[in-house]
Length: 165
Image (cartoon, rainbow, N blue to C red; front, side):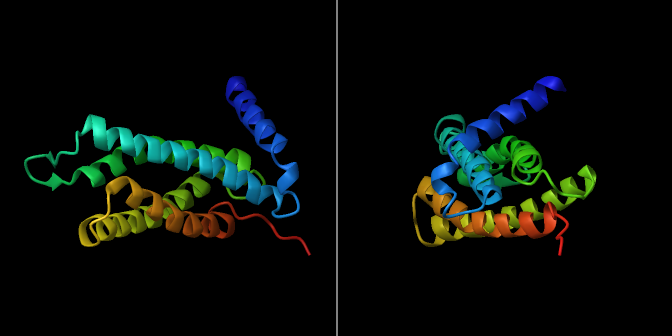
């Protein structure tokens, strides 16, 4: 457990080292969220690209009872990895002052992520299958839309902090 907290402190120190030029434009919490969320998002897009192009080889995934398109399967695969990483970064770096219990935070994080999943699914289907866009750029545009939703929900619902008068 000591190693875990040492890694968290190191990540936070690295993020805060880059913060001074941005101090005029955004609060520290927003910067931390942008940095951790940006890193997790970059990992998500990278994993999506790897899974879609090299693991799935752009082919349908047939489970016998359901067939999943490769872009949706790649999205699910990358999500399995980035969900816990995102929660840990948000809880311990972006929103450490939340008064809510960990299991409540995790439940709320899960709900906010479910909303993000629904938005991801809808926009990926729309961009790839209706608009005919390439999957990776579609994932990038979708991600920008979902980030706005995610930050708002996490700040005001998932990792709510006590507001002092």
